[in-house]
Structures are given as structure tokens and as C-alpha cells.
Length: 89
Image (cartoon, rainbow, N blue to C red; front, side):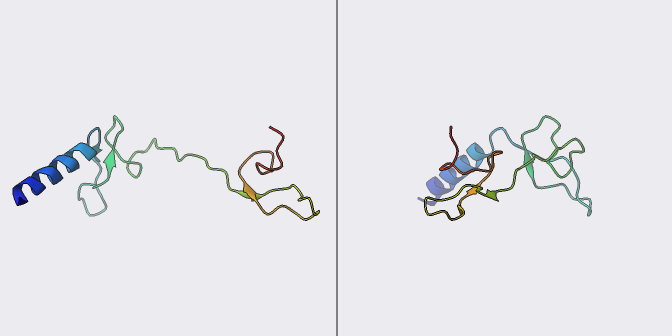
């Protein structure tokens, strides 16, 4: 039973790593990096000099008002500054 369990675990691990390779970069201690990558240059985001971090927008509080006249407390990342309740899509 142990051999079957080990075999299944090995197949699962091999299946998860499909399409990914280990980074070819070296750490400060001259040890190969353990991060995995899918890029053609075989470098992770830490070692790739051409890596550009994706720009994310921070959430802001909605600028709309409720039916009672209070400020809306919902957060939104929409460029209009309004949550899903106050946008006119």
C-alpha cells in the first residue's frame, strides 16, 4: 500500500510542475534559486532584470451617499470612485 501511495504522490508532484522550471539565478550565497518560473529566460521575478511589477490600484471609499444621506462605506477600485451600488453602468 505504501508503494502505491508513494507512486501517486510522485505523479501528483510531477503533474503540478508541468510547464515550470527552476530558476537559473543564484542567491547571495551562490546557491541556485529555488523559485519556479514559466518564462523563456528561465529566471524568476527576483533575478530577471527585465521584470516589471504589475500596477495595482488601491481601493478607495465610495464617493456616493446612501438613501439616508450618509456617506457610503463601500470600497471600490473603479476609476469613477463609485461602488457597484452608485455607478450607472
